[in-house]
Length: 224
Length: 62
Image 1 (cartoon, each protein chain N blue to C red):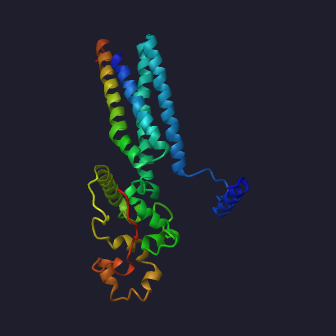
Image 2: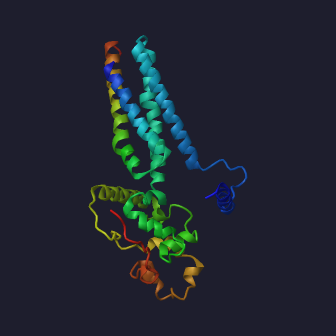
Image 3: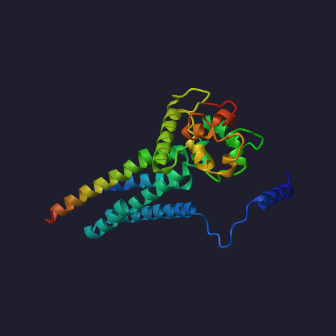
C-alpha cells in the first residue's frame, strides 16, 4: 500500500467523522482521565520527595506533612478518579468485548449486514454509546449497581473458565428495558404489531418483546 | 522509618496500577485496581497512621 493511498483512506475516514461543535474541549470523561493521571503523577512526585527526606533525616514534622499529602490526601482523590474512570470505562462496548468469549457478540453488533436486534440498534444509532450496558442494565441506581455486580460475576466466570458455550442470558430478558425507550413512542403505540389488546401483556412482561423481535444476537462461535 | 519506606513503596505500586487503569480501562487492570491497588494504598495509609500515632505518643501529644 502506498503512502498516497494511506493518505486518501485517512482523508475519507476523516470526512465521514461527525464534526465537533465550535469550542470543543473534549468530554468530561477525557478531562477526568487527564486530571486523574496528572494527580497520580503528582502523588508519585510527592512520594519521591518524602523518600528523599526520609533518607536525609531532619525535621520530622515537615516529613510527616509531606507524607500526609502523599499517603492520605492525594491517594483518596486518585482512587476517586480511578473508580470514576474504571466504572464508566467498563460500560463501553470495547470493555464488554475485552473477553475473547464476547468477541463474536461484539463483532455481530458492529456488523452492518447483521439483522440481529442489537445490530439494528447499533447501526442506526438508536443508542448513542455504551450499547451493551444500556440494554443489559435496568434503569435507576439499583439497575446500574446490579449490572456492575453482574459484570464482576462475568469476569470471575471468565477468569476461572466456569462457563459453558454457547453463552446464554442468565435470566429472561425483561420487557421493561425495551419499554423504557420504546414504550411511550408513537411508533410503538401506533404499530399494527402492538394492538391495544396485546399491549397490557407486553407492559406486564407476560409476552416477551423477543417473541417477535428475536434474535437479539447472532454471534459466530466463540473461542475460550 | 523502615515502616514509612514500606508504606511509600506500597503506595507507589498502588499508584502505578491506578495510572495503568486511568490510561486505558480493561477488565484485567480494573480487577488489579480493585483487588491490588486499593488494598495497597489502604495498607500504606494504615502504616502511616500507626507511625503518626507512635510519633505523637513519643512527643506526649497523645
